[in-house]
Image 1: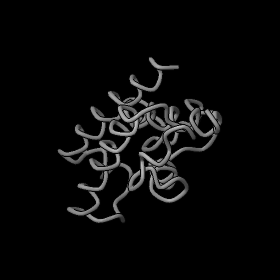
Image 2: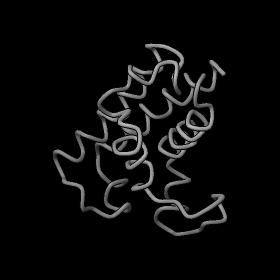
Image 3: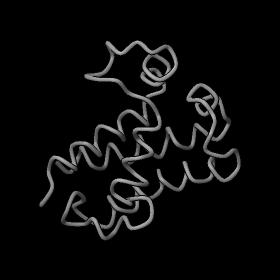
Image 4: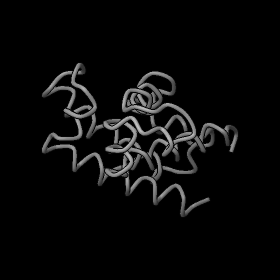
Length: 122
């Protein structure tokens, strides 16, 4: 694995995206004792969509921070679930509004599946 630190960051964001309680505590209630540092949904989005382009080129990250096509597919599913929300509701909602959407459950489920896949293969 060429970028283990990047993989660890990805695992962190997948965990955060899979944990509704964490999201309520940190993103909505701003209780940052639940996190090492300040956290919000926007940070996960920037990591997946802007910083790494995992959202559009997940397979190109195999060998860099992903181990195989299964991991790439599962990470892409998370990004696709977020993208569906952005296409339907836009990118300007608050974290509270995003996590209240009926489609948010798909993000939670996809992130939980991806997180498990990456952690189990460590």
